[in-house]
Amino acid sequence: MRFSMLGPVFKQMFKKPWTNKFPAKYQPNNTTKYLADVASGKIKINPPVPTPDGFRGKIKYDKEKCIGCKLCIKVCPCNAIEFKENEKKIKVYLARCCFCSQCNDICPVSCLSMSDEFLLSDADPYSKDLIVE
Image (cartoon, rainbow, N blue to C red):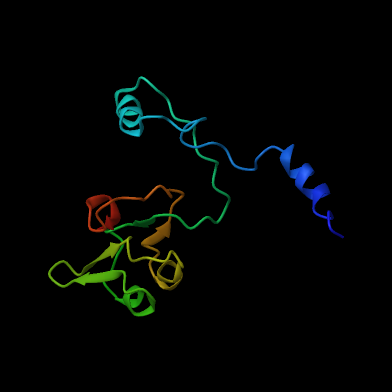
C-alpha cells in the first residue's frame, strides 16, 4: 500500500503529452524578442491543436442579418451584450462573455454564431479585439 502509486507514476513518466507545445517547442529565454521575431517572420510558431466540432470560441456577428429583437440581451447571463439604440444593433464584450452560446441558440435570424478562434487574451478588456460589433 505504501508504494501503490509507483506503477502509475512510472507509466506517466514515459507517455507522450496529449497537447502540443504551443506556441513554441521550448520556452523562449526572451519572450519579447521571440514575439518580435514571430511578427517579423523570422520564426514560425507551432500551430495550436485543432478545435473539435461544436467548439464554442469567439462569437461571430452578422450585422446585416440582425433585426434588433434584443432576445440575446435577455438571455445573456453575463450581461456581455449591449444594445446600440441609434443603430438598432448589438455590441458583444468578449471579456465578459462566458461562451455559453445561449445568445446563438435564441437568435431568430441566426446572426450570432460561435467560431473556432480561442486565442483571445489581451491586457485591455475593452480593446477592439475583444469587442464584436
